[in-house]
Length: 246
Image 1: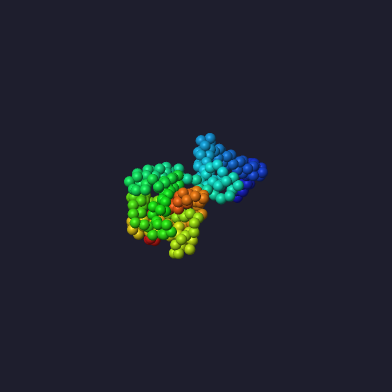
Image 2: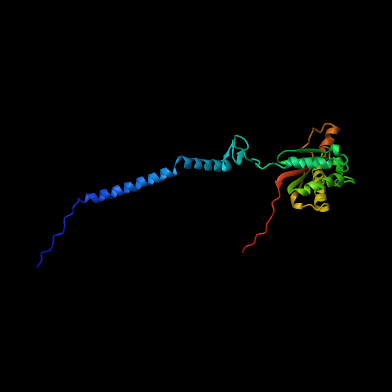
């Protein structure tokens, strides 16, 4: 019978297996380091930094930059910065002044504006009799001149009523709060009911004598404080779209 062959002896010591695994793991580790160093190249870092700066500029809250900014350094409240989109307020002001030049008593109407709104000061005497909230005859001329401008934009419109500090003399209005609010509502109803403008864009509020333009110490100042203000806001009404589940 043929003799059985003896098993061949191991040519390397057993510790070499663990050493080979260690070397393999180290190789993989350095390959990963190389890969990360490629991703972290100067060009890649610049692109990443640029993206981080854009993200920070949009969502940060600080006193210098960002879409949200603190109202003051003490962090009391948040103030939204105006949009970078070019304001259309100056164009609206020009249209209003051109229209009002053609109406009577135009010299008594004041138009002021900023990037957030256009405010039209109309003396109460132009629209209403003393102590009353019904628009007097001939007063619609001023408001009618503004209709083409208001209807050509989709901005919200607020009507503010103001009085002087003298008590209301009409028994229908217990105080100037009711009188100023009723006058503002009368103007809103003119635009929405008679002129058929979108009522969702309008709002009315009354301030009585709490926000005077001048001190109520002379008759001239009181007359200037009795006013109705049409405020065309920079904010536009959002178009509602019907949504249906499939």
